[in-house]
Image: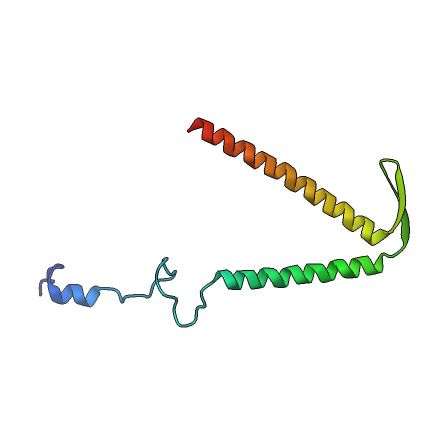
Length: 117
């Protein structure tokens, strides 16, 4: 009967060591592997430009399909606009109002944080 070799012997630890595996996720500052393409600001801007162009095309199709004229009354002023244009103007007005209120809230929170520090 032979006694097992001690676990701290160099021969034994070299045989049992698991093979080194490549890292699964790249850490910041390390170069990308051969198959990866790094994300850049230009690439992000290009993707945003393409998405914006698609949205504009969809809006154009919406306006061209909704050309029936409707009467709009706003603060006593009455006028006629195509339905698509009227809905688009209403959406733009809502987005501007939400943006103005959101900006006011962000400024309010920043001012509050500065006073606390």
